[in-house]
Length: 209
Image 1 (cartoon, rainbow, N blue to C red):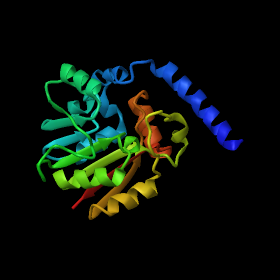
Image 2: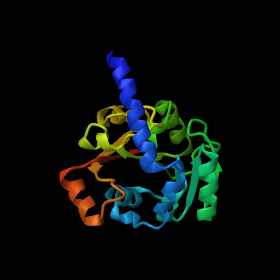
Image 3: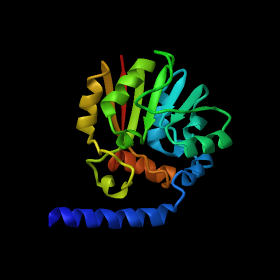
C-alpha cells in the first residue's frame, strides 16, 4: 500500500515538473547564457577556487563556460552538446563521466556542478575525475535541507546527503573543504546572499590530492 502510494505520488510530481519545465529539458538551460552567474553564491565560490584548465563534467548546454578562460565541457547527451556548440566557441565533447576520453592529469580542475545526483556510479566517476585532474569541485543541492522539496528531477539517480558525499570524497582525495551556501538561479543577488548566510540550500566540496 505504502509503495503504491509512493509510486503514485512520484508520477504526479513528475507530471507537474514536466509542465513547469516544458518538453525541452536542455533548452531551458540556455537562459543561463544571459543571466548574471556571479549573483549565485555557489558559482562565485567555485569560480574563485578553480584554477588553470577546467573540465566541466556533465556540462549540459555549457553555460558554465562563461566563468572560465581555459575550459572544456563534456556531457553524455548529444542534444546538450549540440546546443553548447551553438552557444559557445569553447571545446565540448560527448563523453560519459564514468569513462572520460582524456589522458591522465591533463586538467588542473574538474567541476561537477549539479551533476553528482545524476550519476549511476559516483565512486567510479570520482576515480575518473581523480585520474584526469588532481583537484575536484563538486556542488549540488543540500538534500538534507528544506531545499530538497524544491529540487525534484526525474533524472536524479541518488540524492546524497552532505555527510555521505563528504565520506565518498575522502576515499579519493586527501584534502577536503566543505562549504554551505546558496545556489538558487532564479533569485536576485541580495536574496541569494541572504539564503547562503541564514538558510543555505547548496553545498560545495573541494577535494585535492
